[in-house]
Length: 156
Image 1 (cartoon, rainbow, N blue to C red):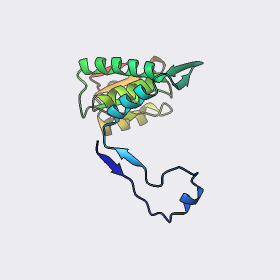
Image 2: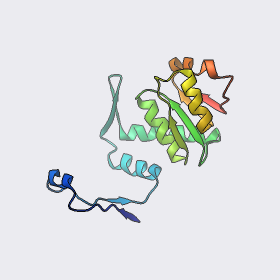
Image 3: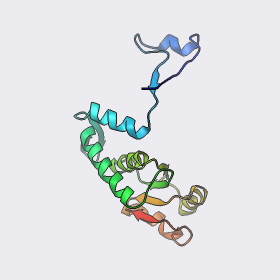
C-alpha cells in the first residue's frame, strides 16, 4: 500500500505539548475516502459512531445504509465527478448521503441550513449540482428558487 508521509519541522513549538506516543510525522495510506470508509467501518463495526435524536448508530449499520444509498444514487445515474448538494442538519442522513456520494466518486456540497433561499441559489449557480438531498421540512428553502435552478433529482 502506498503511504503518504507528512513531515513537519521537529522544532515546531506544538510538539512540546504532544503526549508520549503521539507521532510527530503520521503516515497516511494513499486510498480513496470511500475505501477508507469501508476499512474503518469494518474495523470498528460494533462500535457506536453517531448519536442523533436519542438513538445511537454503530459503524456496521452506517456502512449498510451508506452502501444501500450509494446503490440507489448509482441507479439514478450519479457517477464520478458529479456534484451532489446536501441540505441537512447534523444527522444520520447527512453522513449517509455524504459517504454514499463519495464512494461513487462524487463531490459533496454541503448547504448551510441557515441560508436564505437566495444564498442557496447563489451556491447552486456556482457549483451546479446534479442532485439535492434534503429533509422535507427544509424543502421550503428550495421551493422559492425551484424555477431558477433545475436539479436532475431531489431526494427528501
